[in-house]
Length: 295
Image 1 (cartoon, one colour):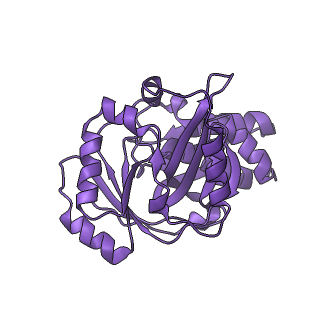
Image 2 (image 1 turned 90 degrees about the vertical axis):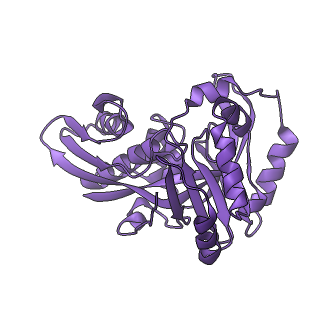
């Protein structure tokens, strides 16, 4: 079985407060984009094998392995699975590649082994792997709450072209959060974003906000330089995705994007990816759809 696991970007990320369980309460607008990891799933008699060159971790620490292990345990399927991943999404870059791989493995195994679990059941299972994982079952832009794992509202975005710049570095999410000064409550702002996204259509560049930018820029000042370079290239707005290190520029359309790409300064080792958002309803909609990349 061949799957494509899409990356995501966060257009809006507000840290509402600290939860009793130690996690942070978030409100975030997450958008699946046309940048994919390629995954091949095959049944095996026993065991789990994962081959994922370039993932930056060993087999058992790979979220795809953990997802397969959890799926077999919770469903009681007595078989194994072979997983091959061709990485296109940079690891540790705030684009959700590992979480997307894990979610795609769970969705794919549900189909491969004909276990018939509902999307709700699969999302609950995926939430045990990582906070981002449930989002990838939705297949469209969504406002997420909780740890980033609770769907609140579907978001309708005006069409835009995106340009993602990823420096050759990984930023520890834990380190970024440790540098964050988190207020006790933000109830009024929280309700404002919930009410606004329920309306029909929002311009992405008008909602760009990320509470993790300031601490991340303090840890890696070069991210602020990337932000300035995207603005100088004509982006309507710029935001860091998640806890970094990818920085996203928003352009009006493909023509505007091409103009910006010709103007931006290039750096050795950086990745530059022009893309758009996805609107498919399930992982199956991602199959056979490409992405153009440059860098």
